[in-house]
Image (cartoon, rainbow, N blue to C red):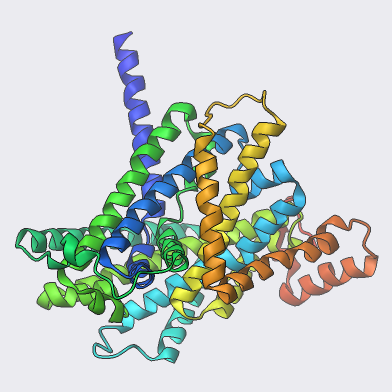
Length: 481
């Protein structure tokens, strides 16, 4: 009937809106308050920086389309980890998991924690950079507090996430509106083509590649929809629609935010600022400038909470699959929280805290490496299983163009920052012997199982009665790897 058709259309529309909220909400985060300085520094001019932001969104759209095909062809939870394990086998899947646990999530958390401390302390130290130890101590305190929250209650952690999401929306909306008012009032000298593309010397290709790495940090999260493809009704229609709308929308918001920055700040002012949004607020908001650091601090606080929540679940999933020590698959019997995985994540993050923009290059390089391997898997899977039914099948030019850009970006980034990118690559490759010793080697001597299982577990968890192994649904002192 007409009424039934109308109800179905309304339902599909609501579902599409939900997908849009999920994708845009996960992409738009604290990165837009962190990356503009790094993008401008490496690109060398306002005009080229804006071009990098727009092209960064285009590249994210290409990657999203490839992931949409993988998501409905291999309908498993776990995203990249599941796809690469299915296509290339356990070793490649383990390396992705290893790099995510040791590099991607901890380094991202460290960057967001440092941004939180910088924005909180900037009003206290208005005329200078906040002291090194103060930012590190505040970052560590915030991280430990949110680790305790996530260990104590899942409900409390999710409520914090819901409440603090408002912070980033307030901050971005305020920046864009005030910036547009500035432009309408004629304050756009920096944005005119003659001035925007002025530069003392043209940037090298390697520097432009690093600018893209900085921008990609703000766009990270575009593959989030792959974690919900199993629950999506009519993914063949709704998944591409969500991608076509959400990523251009995010790109538009990011570009407008950067235009707003440049409407009131010269490139020199932006580069010298330790907290760009705070400097923007001080110049334009007067007595209401305190709103800006509060909004960004709320945004980054929620970002830390969200990444802690998801990264601990990744450790949990890897341990349940036997790719990480089974201690990390334990959850507290009463609180139902993965406390060992959370403590492991927090410990690694504290060790990762360093200089913000180097950390962004570090994590973005590994992120792009993982994306490239996954999308190369799409091409291999097309060749390996050509007759497999694919509800979504993108044109071959999409993954090929992405991989060409990927190869150029990683090659020039490695050339420009060999130490930063090389260390990340080496850490990733250390997973090879770990995989063969801990996962592939099945017949290990009993003494190794005793050491990894009972001794380590009893040291960390002295009261086994309060713990359960979710992979078996019972108390356990054993270790799989």
